[in-house]
View 1: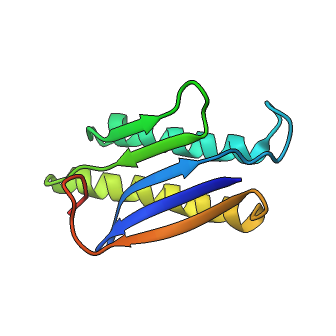
View 2: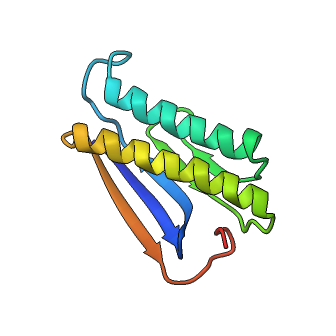
Length: 121
């Protein structure tokens, strides 16, 4: 099962972590895993290449099944708006996948009560 956690601080998404495998089909045929992978990789690429944000990314490239993204403090208003749009689109996509394939993926929203060094403000 894929476990996705989306971190929120105030009204912003400050990061996310995805672990596990969907096991909804054979390797290369698993549409749930493919959907989550494409959505998360597109989000990372969008934050880095479109919004120009230097995010903190950790992944298990050897085994797969793990991705952690932390968004730094963003002071530029244009970058903040872009990051928010990209991250909310990611969140909506995961909610849609979870609603349809809840047997293979869980989604948790985690609220931070204080800003960390690597959060959007």
